[in-house]
Image 1: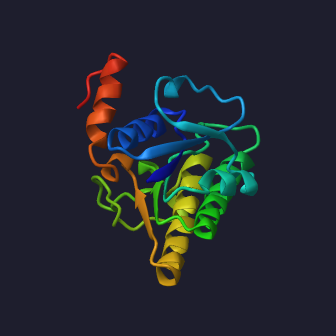
Image 2: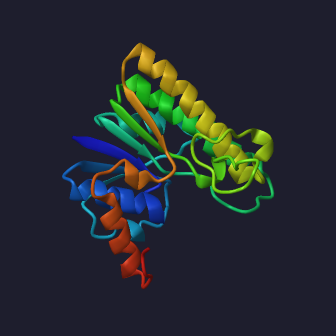
Length: 196
């Protein structure tokens, strides 16, 4: 089985790719042309150039895969032109999931962010079930990830009705890959940090 992983040049996406490889899944990673691939050094993955803003590159990357792990996002605290957050995180996510549907991806795992989880009115930690609205999202990153998550949930409902294909939204992508937490802990430790 082959899976496409977006965002594998980053910390979380790289750990997801490592976990998939460790479980025996053949991994293809999508990265922008000229991206720093150091995070993938020594990992037996197929690298393909592409961009979430280029639908044809997404279809090419997805062709031949059965699963998609979408971990990529534009993350920054600020941008001179905030439209980049929405172009990549919202429109790019929608375009990727539409391409996944077109090529027949059987399982999609979308990595959201804890920033898109609501906070209870009385205080305390929120969960995926805590009501949340766009107005509660501070900053373009959180707003764009919240909007992307709404797009993913909408497309997931449509896809489930049409094809039965599975789409999952997770705030911890390691919940979706067996044995991934151990890989994450190993990567964290290799960087000199103690994992919790």
